[in-house]
Length: 200
Image (cartoon, rainbow, N blue to C red; front, side):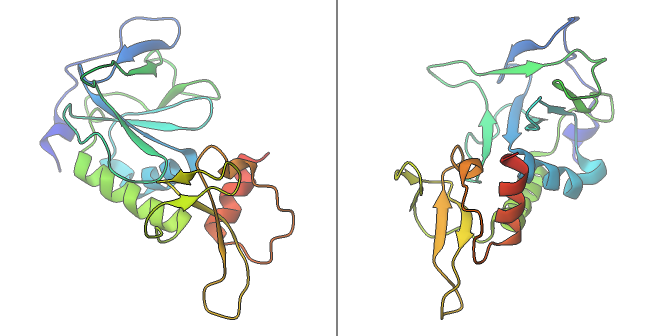
């Protein structure tokens, strides 16, 4: 188990009565993951996870040691840290907020749960990415809606074809939940679940 994971928190959220915007890169960096990938990664990490904040939209945020890479090239995952030309902030709830639906501590901050080992977190998120969205296509793909290339293509539809792989329709992260084809001939389980959860 990582030394960082066991190290008692050198930081605790300041006394507050509401969510407070705190700067990433000062005490910790944060890793943000969209609900679908984040939930699976949290399950994969199990007891090896550190503290986790969940916002009202279901997005999960892990705390990792300052200096984590700024990009892990995973779909719908971002590393929040201090950049040379701008500051990045994370909304941190009071310690006592441990239940939703508002922003809360999904895994409460404690001596046993503070920083998550960045390597283990990356592994869990990478596995979750593959499980939920399938193999990442080579290169950028056009979003079906905005017709702009995206580095984070999410499969939202797969048409049946005569070959083993039918035509895949991709979306950028903002437009994936908006895909509305009512009766696709074939959808990957991951895309179907993604569409179902996000389009309600």
